[in-house]
Length: 90
Image (cartoon, rainbow, N blue to C red; front, side, top):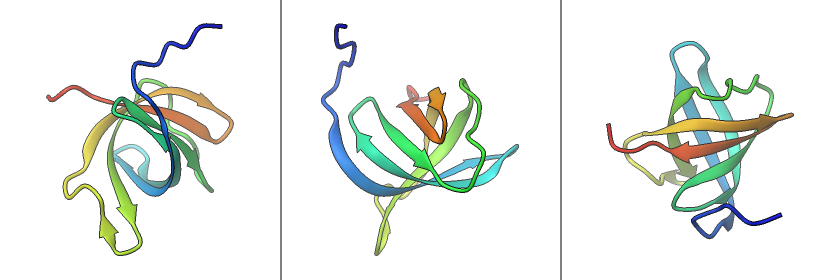
């Protein structure tokens, strides 16, 4: 199988907070991240459906990594793991 990724992935253990009006706040942890997106494990919540755009903030122990949430689209979902892709500037 050929690799379709455009960006190199980096292993991560970053807390992810996702917001969506229909689902509220969903907390997860990024397993890896790249310039194109992130793979996030969701704990104790229902995963948003594929195609959903969520507002995402990446957090570390002492505060946010990104001050303003960024838009990301759910590209795939399996069990409690979702693939998020950064959305183009809107």
